[in-house]
Length: 170
Image 1 (cartoon, rainbow, N blue to C red):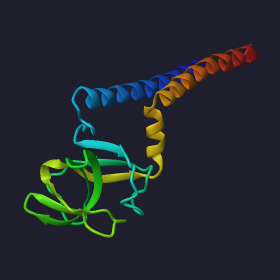
Image 2 (cartoon, rainbow, N blue to C red; image 1 turned 90 degrees about the vertical axis):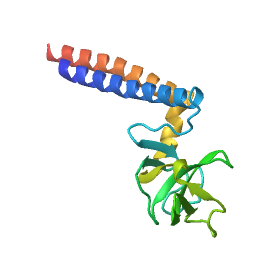
Image 3 (cartoon, helix red, strand yellow; image 1 turned 180 degrees about the vertical axis):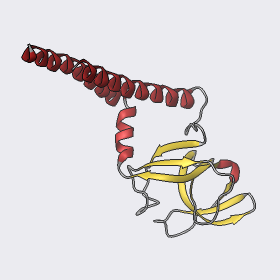
């Protein structure tokens, strides 16, 4: 019985710790280093806020990108657009030297600008449908409070259940 309690508590601490460290990393990267999309080990992630890539990538999806040495026609990339001051995820429709022509799958026309290779964060390598909404919530103060509060409740419930089981076995 004691081993189950240790496993549950360890898992709770790991989950809460990972969320706190992740949120701190994102906060520091965005505020101190002015990096809107922090990259770790070549990977970056984001919650999709526009429907320009529907049906493949929808609003509320969570995307993971991986930086590549080269990008080819057909790759879906995330890049920083200086003009709008935002990150955009679109498909490459033309490669011209060190720039890319892009277009959202749901858009009627190509983007009216070229994307320099230096602005590309990476190629989309994974799409988790709807999970972006969960991530967005967990990054909010209320979400973090719910995770920590839920962890405390589970911690206490573990004590109660273990005590009941101990008394039952006596």
